[in-house]
Length: 245
Ligand code: F6R
Image (cartoon, rainbow, N blue to C red; front, side):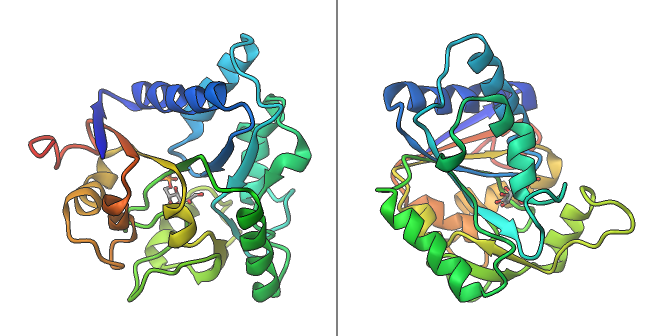
């Protein structure tokens, strides 16, 4: 595991975007596993900037997102489909048919999850999986629990996750209770993993995930068992690990 503690979110985004660009340049038809949330916004902005300069081409890239809220249509501003279009897809030349996101409007969880797993299987595997980190140590929406969920599954979001995400919803909207999330096995099968985290409120989760015991109580701790993980955190999120790296 390579761990970089960088000065701030700007530097983090640049470094993360560099790694993603390198992947796309080396393999133009790369399968990218993508995340939503606040953490990757700067990374996506940097990728767009390089795309606009002509340095990046997404025409053969295939994307597979980690998760989606159950019950939100793709044009709902809080859906992860909307997020991805707004912050990345609408600004680069990725083909619509190459974009994959769990279908939050498929209310039959069995159908939604098996369909997504089939797509992942048929993809030939994720080349580079980008991950953010929840304050409770979640990755995707794999919440702390008694066991690692292997494949795509329906998750009841924990109160801490719903509270953390409430900032993105309007006052009269409530955060959905359920989401579909790629499972831990699918995440761990990615050839390379890039975990990013910034801000003081992630410091505890970063320490537990990278240096604590591997346990489903801290889902991100499983990444310690993957042999191609790069972690980029800013100084605030890396505060508790700076003497350990
Ligand atoms: C989002 C996702 C989540 C977030 C995590 C951190 O697709 O999978 O695991 O990465 O909740 O969210 P932010 O970046 O908003 O702090």
